[in-house]
Image 1: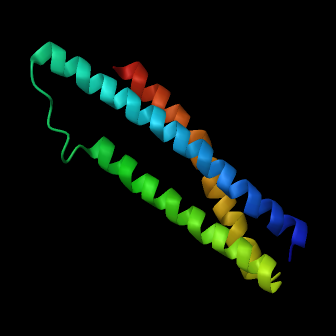
Image 2: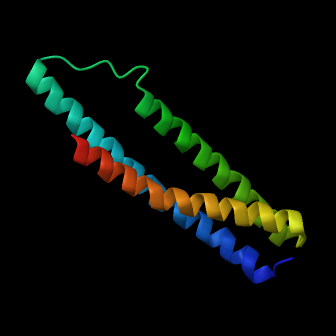
Length: 118
């Protein structure tokens, strides 16, 4: 299922999407740090962020996207190296690409939505 061109393209696109997600998550962390510094200046003390459901879900989503990248990239490289052009590797890589692309679309939207609430 799928040609060698699909697997080589997936092996190149997955790291590119990961870089975009890393940059967006960095912007998200910077906006959170700016918010905390504004609160610190206004109240004189920093709020307790431990157990914050927003940051906990962000951390879990980041771990999930990282695991998705590792699985997809490993499958793509193994498919290229050992010529495993079968249905399992095709669907595994296609699913990884889909999840990473949805993440690359949703993270900036969430960042802007979070920034507009503050």
